[in-house]
Amino acid sequence: MTTLEGRIEAFAQLGKKIMGLTTDELTDLTDKARNENSWFVPENTKMALQGISRFLDKEVLKKWTSNYSFKNSSSKKIGVAMAGNIPLVGFHDLLCVLLSGHQLVAKLSSQDSVLYKRQFD
Image 1 (cartoon, one colour):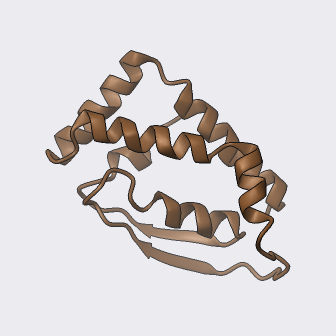
Image 2 (image 1 turned 120 degrees about the horizontal axis):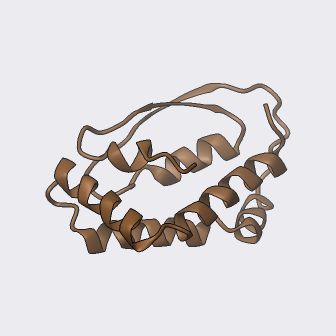
Image 3 (image 1 turned 135 degrees about the vertical axis):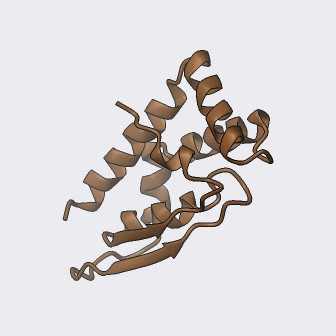
């Protein structure tokens, strides 16, 4: 298990990757999301990605996590059933589980799996 600082750094890097998507990459991603769920109009998917990327700032994450104690050293498997009614609606649950040092066992919605499976190399 990595340290809290390491987990924060990993999420901050993800935020930078999301912010760094080119217009073509963003269009491709929003199109794939809409093909999976016709309710996911590109504007809403872009808004979800932008909101998440702003939250995935290292200083924002440090300030947020400073309000909690992560002293418990035993990692647990936490099951999360992700909803699919709003783009990336389950991301906050994913973030909380992983930042707290636990293992995520997620059941992705068949209506919102593309966005979670996107590779950010």
